[in-house]
Image 1: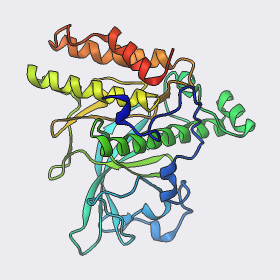
Image 2 (image 1 turned 180 degrees about the vertical axis):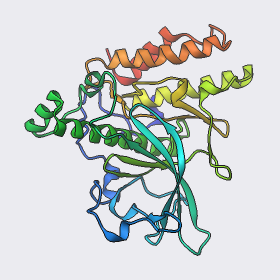
Image 3 (image 1 turned 60 degrees about the vertical axis):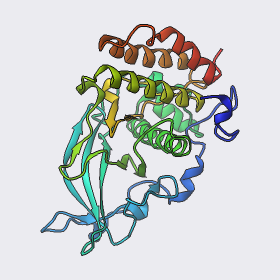
Image 4 (image 1 turned 30 degrees about the vertical axis):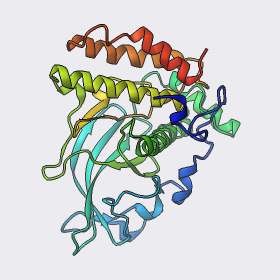
Length: 311
């Protein structure tokens, strides 16, 4: 990829400081985030457990919405089980369907744990470079008060949603990075495109679970390098990149789990996060047999730092 592959709008100005509470352009597509007030109509159906779709009171992902996505207000959401549990959030499988029609889709609902019990590690480093406008909120976050923890939880969800939306739009335009489509944001719950076998409800495998043949390994490394270039040009480092945060779906390497996404310009540790991401994945690929001539973490770190405008 070359510099002219991105329009001026897609490339961030060198040295520009972006704050997470600067509203991204895609947020205009939906109403304000946050759970709706309690409503008797929100009670689960006693027979099926389905509830009315939360689409109407959530922030929506980028337009145009994919054809497979069910956006009808008559739709209902049915919980099908847990796809993944983690320290910070659990991911649930949800079917959104319009009753008495064939309109349905599977979604992955990522729900961050109650802020009293969440176990985000080293969150102070990731939060550097993120700001809110009110000093009271900044003090609460710094002091880890109950209110501050709730603010932090909201920042993780909003940061991941914003990063996924921007990367999905870039991927749709240039085909150089793959992420799940971010369906909606509602409080600290993200609804994402389900990637996997829709018939069995089985999620796509993580890279760590696979033992790719040499040709496939080389192809996946090439896809990863392209994706990291896109991240750097957008001003990001994943922040926690590993073979466990990469899916392989229909031959494509897909980036997931971006709540800890780092603004490499605004965060004083931006270059260190970028370098750590590269070192972790390069070590995995080298251990699986990729030749050292292809896996050069030092050269890749320097190249990505230049793309991000780091000196």
